[in-house]
Image (cartoon, rainbow, N blue to C red; front, side, top):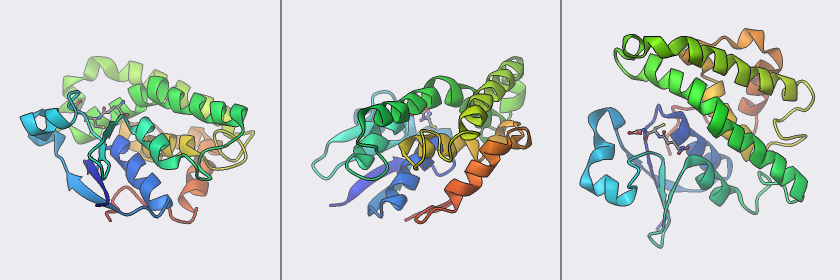
Length: 204
Ligand SMILES: N[C@@H](CCC(=O)N[C@@H](CS)C(=O)NCC(=O)O)C(=O)O
């Protein structure tokens, strides 16, 4: 039995996992789950993930993994996407934690409400300025690093690039303009040109 990924196509957290699986040429079964239809609140789904969130990866022995970056680590261990040097590995994790505590809460949340949720812009209008400020600060941090190294954690592509690429390449859907961050724009093109890369619409 191959891996089973429970995911929503337009979710950036779910795209991270598809991108990692495709880059690693790992076969998997995709199960579509629609957050907007309430699929993550059914008793069956809550048994799978009591947090009621996507993505969820089921292993062939029935083990269930949640949290997109934990899933990335599971898939990437032992491959070129995870450095073996301790400090380099810590730098990769540093940017994956940054993705979860600064990048996703601003850019990912803004994209979710402004693009994916009908009426979301009106519902969340009081939060938009804050998202923009924090989103630009996050892109600024990436710009600083990517002005010095070709990939976010150093000289080679790691899981941190996958984690950050997912929302960054669609930052326009969060009302953010990458033109002000040229090193980030160049990195988006660099990542997209790598062998095995797939876009957000790709399905196995
Ligand atoms: N930190 C989690 C966040 C997961 C998350 O926010 N998933 C969203 C889709 S991108 C979700 O399932 N939302 C539905 C909900 O929270 O009800 C991760 O990285 O996997």
